[in-house]
Image (cartoon, rainbow, N blue to C red; front, side, top):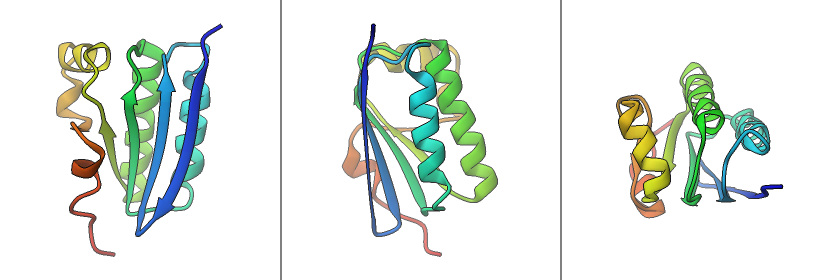
Amino acid sequence: MPSLDITAMSGSGTTIVTAAGEIDTAVSDALRDQLATELEARPKVLVADLSEVPFCDSSGLSALIDIRNRAGEAGVVFRIVTQQRGLLRPITLLHLDSVLEIHPTLEAATENVPSP
């Protein structure tokens, strides 16, 4: 059974949720739930650090789109960190890169935090 390690940390208006492992139907709800929980605190920026996620299926992509929509409604900027081909390829093929804010590094994703 696939496992996904998820951790979260907050500071300076930014919350970072880090996931490591493959994202599929067995674990996508856990990622969605953790991101949704962190979103409730209304950080200025919510970052999903997926740099250690080599694979993400449609359920994982759906979770990311759902959180992006919820973040937009809450006035929270949602950013994703990845350089993994297994995640970037489906995002690009499905043109989700026009909807999701993707950054190559955590440093890039945490720059330019919006003012309150």
